[in-house]
Amino acid sequence: MIQIPRGTQDILPKDSHKWQFIEERLHAIAKNYNYKEIRTPAFESTELFVRGVGGSTDIVNKEMYTFKDKGDRSLTLKPEGTAPVVRSYIENKMQHDVVQPTKVYYMDPMFRYERKQKGRYRQFVQFGIEAIGVEDPLIDVEVLSMLMHIYQSFGLKDLKLYINSIGDQDSRAAYNEALVDHFRPSITEFCTDCQVRIDTNPMRILDCKKDRDHELIRTAPRMYDYLNEESKAYFEEVKSNLDAIGIGYEIDYNLVRGLDYYTHTAFEVMSDAEGFGAITTLCGGGRYNGLLEMLDGPHETGIGFALSIERLLLALEAEGIEIPEPEGIDLYICALDEKATEKASHIVHTLRTKGISCDIDYKRRKLKAQMKDADRKGAAYTIVLGGEELSTGNVELKHMGSGESKTVHLDELHTLLEEK
Image (cartoon, rainbow, N blue to C red; front, side):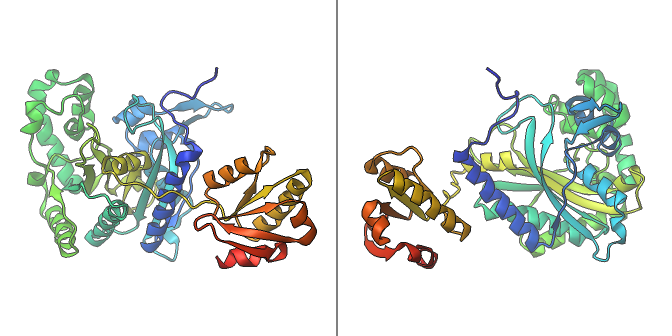
């Protein structure tokens, strides 16, 4: 029997309403913050991610689904959303759009060849935003406020926002030099990946999952101590404005975000909910000054975040927050014979085109079984259609909740149900 690929999942009809509920909420919040949706291809040139994400990252080195097409071009299923958005921004010359900054969001499947863990899949859905074209602490605060608004709108409470500053390129270069001096004498005690990172991206050693408990990581220099005055002032303005609007946060001096393009503000949201799991990160993001130029684009800056819908669902479950069940159908027509079933199919067609949700029994079951089916489908009302009803056109419209019935003509069904 052919089975689902490892690391993927079927979202069954009994659960799809949860996804729809979350997606609708995310669309609505994005609209409130004036972010417009962008849709990029499911696959891109492999070079986009090698250059845009960073050749030293696990994403590029270990996790990408890469293949050659019939034209011998190397393509990759997108593992993250920022690089494709930036590619589109550059290619479509969006820096010349009248409305600035460019504020977009996406909600797309992503693909990474990861070891399967709770809440992590090889195909997963990310909601992300990007604000490109302005470098201002206030836009950083807007992005952080939107992020916390999203989680809190679902009722989540066991959350912690961690922030840090990676500083500008000069600050980052000075910090990387200090990290090399700190780790180099004992680098052989670290995993093979970190032994490579010390020469390619030393900050990623602080992000290592294998060696995160190593004493040298706990005693590593603090990024904040290597920020120049401009970077410190930027970070202080971010913090003061978060304070002003009441968004709580903690500073994590080891929070660096592993991708090569991050500068200034970096952040993560963690869940403290009991039972959430060992990996508590819900979301991450930060400012990227230089990414557009790395991709041969204009000298523009941006900031964004990406969250996993799968992990959002896991957090809701951990805090015991239930997504409301969808409403049932408006009407179920029970038919007593073949002729009535045929007429019922005509009626539901007409009602559906007028915006009334309704259904009938296609298994030609007895009345009792049909009424049970109507109840399972959450029908607000039922009618029974037989020979007498077909001849007179009058039916008993029964409210399934109260049990009350009212005699109506079939021609009145649409109007009456619209009013309910």
